[in-house]
Length: 297
Length: 321
Image (cartoon, rainbow over all chains, first blue to last red; front, side):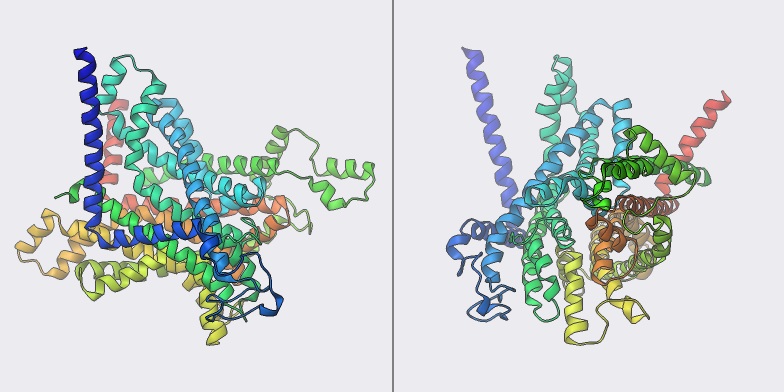
């Protein structure tokens, strides 16, 4: 009975400690106004994506040829496109696509990268050597070129673009994960786990990954913005999300042929991307400073 | 140092062969039948078989891969375009100078503008010299490079009419592409230079240099800057990947007939030998540029040099014993 009680107490302490850390993190984050601004903008973007149907002044698929090519005005604050759809309404709905795409692509790339990186970092030796040489090969292809080649194989569209972007992110995530793992592998608690007959799989999943994960949190946050930007480039080249899906990159791609006369069709989707990525970067910068132990007071 | 360089150059060979295998495999996996798309739907079966054999597409994967590697590295031939029948090598080598020029000038501009901005920001921390360039740089890393290029076109070509929006010709045709190619790099360089300068300026040896009465100018340029450069050289890998990869978008927007533009067209037309050739060429260029960056890093960073020297000495000792 005493044994059990001790465990419970230890468990509670653990929870309390974790909450404490999180609390301390938010406290430090709050001292950085730029990070708070970033977080607030990002929250607003997510809310407007969720409630897009309620906020949007028009239906995003509704065409109205008589109101095509209208410049921004009080009626259509971002103007209308070639078939008279309201660009502001499309941007709101597009936030759903772009944000989902950015987040899922980042998660996919990082999860796969983590698996590869932790295998390489934990086993070392031949496994490490082989995996690292493969990553060398992948990373010697510039990111956008690789994305284009993979899109050629997988195809176009919203879900396929997520996979393309995810594959593009694997190598970088794996390398970062490996570096973190190499650091963590030398820690006493890993030695302790392995001495007490903990299996390799369990050590990787329960000890290595969670600790290495928190070390790469900042890069992962920034990765969402990177994915959104890269996906918009792919869409612009016609190999990402396809119009009429109102994803921001697809809207840019749709508007490019009207750039000369009706530039707002390109200006506003790009601004939407910029605001989103800016918010993510502001938050990421603040998070890095808040997590940096050297800056703790 | 020479041995280090030599070793790095040797290491490049397996990587480039690896890229060849990877890209060949990717193109092998692409769904669709190039023979059918060349002949169209009304071709006779025997015609189909004949062309398939002539193109070598009836052989198993491993044989085709081997043939491709021999073709590329022994005969230095990237194959022929499915659509135009023109040699891919000729097309790519004709276009490469433009891609290289755009890439290198953009990189150069991003360094000579980004680094001084970063130094100035770090030295005048908290003033307008700091927050203004830094805010612009933050916007710069937050916008897609090709969108910035489009906005440059809207402003300088369409609204003001100062510069041509696309095409080739004199120097005025290069200004917008280089501006858009370099902008992201300028922003990244300025941010990194500022961050690492601030870190270095807090070190003890800077305090020491100042307290012995060294002029501030010398403290910054002789002590702080060389040390702050090291993370910057690491960052160059990402910047170069961005410039050479993003070059495809820049070339497409400004209709510059470079390798990137060629590749985008080839991908859209499903012209696989052309895609393979351009990916390979862009990767080789990128790897060589990265190699040069690494060598510069080894030359600049005494730690890398020392590490290599000690390893070489150790090996020599082992060999002697």
